Length: 574
Image (cartoon, rainbow, N blue to C red; front, side):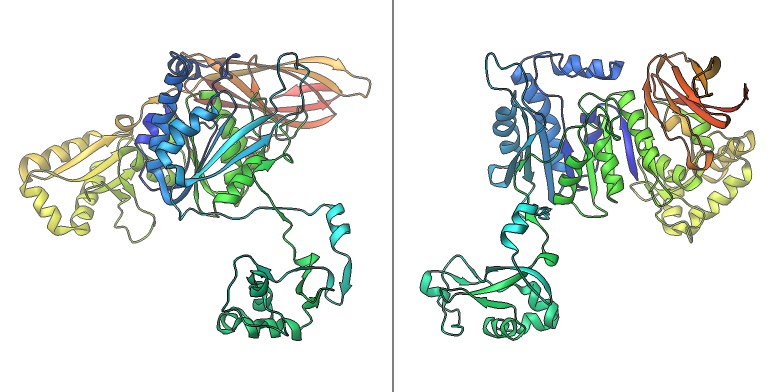
């Protein structure tokens, strides 16, 4: 499943499956001398910062290389990595990390992204305007899709000057480099005479006769077909050329110098207030270039969530990791804001989990997630599974009950299901006094515990009972109260309202978020994602308004409060 994971990415990467990722984009903290990379300011980020900067460039390279080694293991043979950096350490990263881990021969491009315009500070050197993105494949088999930009009006007006009944066209070359003496002559012209060879556009041939017939045609037959369908024109020098139509053009191929993608501006709709937020257009280009629908994309420094948000929109599967609670929670809200009925679900893996959220979540999603947390393999189908929800890695059946005080009847049914699942293995486990299956639940009643003990003592049959809080730590979510202060009418007759949220948690409050047009079926769609103080002032016209505020604590747990506001001369809330 798509996942946001809170924690040290090195430890998390070590527990992911080898050869499981199609594309990795990482934007690690730059080796910069100004303010380094403390952005969110929460405990996880500061702890990571102190570890990373305890030494100089050698320590930084070693820290990053450990993580890139794990990323290489995770990539499929067809996979690729894009590593985003700036001038402070780009040479070290390429020579001492990427060339050594991925191999010099698998270097594809050093993409230069012009992220800003010239600065005023030019007293000592030219301003630094670019970032660098190193692009490596894991092998020669890596996936690649050419990316095209729209043709400029200047280009179209300068080259597309002809028109026929098929549309506007320009003439293109019918030959390519490298002489081929076996090429046929066509109407007195032979490209081998000038050291070239025929380069017939098979796309046009396929449109005329179909892909299967195209494969069977000789080069000469293809040329004659083009001539017969009025696709060939002759230059003044007697050279055959092919008509290339504007309405068939993909545009101009994009190279490794990107100047057309602007940084996230202060008024941009996608802006979330994350200082180093990368534009969605940048990630969209990378994902379209080196992945396809259904592929899995990994961002081990998820930051403001741009990679996973774009991957989700482009129908890729994804995993996002970050040390910061705020990074994970802001990314979660960013995803929630853009999701619709066709979006795939995702899970957020924290250090601790709220009981209510787990207990009352979607049953199938919870079963899949908790089995994965246990280290097992969940069933991909929900039918014909004998009531079993997964298995351990060595093949023992697992059943999950999303309930408390599981009773004795569940033990009886589970025992029978285990035997039906694999009767031979079941008998072997009993003979060896080993568990026949794993039963996971929030808690077990006295009858279930007694029956498991009886089976063990009287029949040598072991069923392992595992509580959810034995697998993942469970905590209480923060408390939240909201007060409204009417600041009076403005000049247009609307009420100016001050909303004050107050969160309480034993571990401390991280931030608040607000949705000023909350609709329960759509879920929480944050208008303000990061509010450190918990106070907002908004203007509301007469009528009914539904406002939702969310508080997030230092463990990443959150609570939601919904306010129904009615304004009709006076302010009323409930």
